[in-house]
Structures are given as structure tokens and as C-alpha cells.
Image (cartoon, rainbow, N blue to C red; front, side):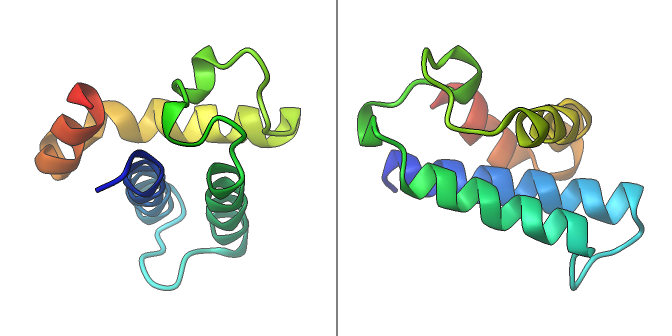
Length: 97
């Protein structure tokens, strides 16, 4: 799987997990999480670095708006550590690639 697709999948897993646990929604996602997921996928799709991109938190020219950046940090801070228990394969993929 190419890097951008893998990252879109990972952010999708994290946002869905966050929404399921925090907002008690599974399918469909709440409006806020659905918009965040769409925004994140769009930004990844249009990343100027393409397959050579670093992780977003290490990027020298972040493409997320400040509000969305804080929101995605919140989601990843909650979902990331818990992925080990609930989605171990996705966690390993995210960690090692």
C-alpha cells in the first residue's frame, strides 16, 4: 500500500475509534468527526510532498489549519495508545512504517 493511502487508512481508523468511544457513535460518524475525517483525507491527498512526506507533526510546512490540527492531535492522542489493544495490526503498521 502506498504511503498516502496507508496514512488515510490510519487516520480513518483513529477518527472512527475516537468517535465510537467519545461520542458513542459507530456508523455513521457524528458530523464533527465525519468532517474531520474528510478534511484529513483531503489534506493527505493534496500533500505537496506526496510519497516523500514526513509525519504531519514533523512537517516544516503544515497544511492543516490550526483548529483542525489541534482537533487531530486530540483524536490521535486518545486513539493512538489505545490502537495497540483494539487494532493491533493497524497500530503496528502505523508505528513501524
